[in-house]
Length: 142
Image (cartoon, rainbow, N blue to C red):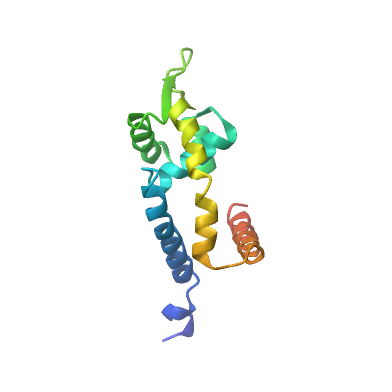
């Protein structure tokens, strides 16, 4: 068997495992906020950039509307966001935070520090990892 086909030589496996494990670190922290990891990402986009349409959120998170729409409906049921169709073009749905959604930001502000503590890495090491990942993604998306 070629060494290239050994499981231990595959770059995809540790990347997959890392993504899975990091997301698993978020679960108990986000449970207290009553958010799933994808819902948390949507909320971060809205906290950071304010009102967005569905396609803008999808572009930022690399999610298609088929994945995003049910997620947004659940956030709306939790009274964290409001979905509103554009009056000129009903295909465009605008997403904005409710008062409750804005207040949740305060409670969520501890999440990044808890994740960093869970990873047991220095801020510098995490920044280096983020830079390497960013470079890989930039190469793939060229």
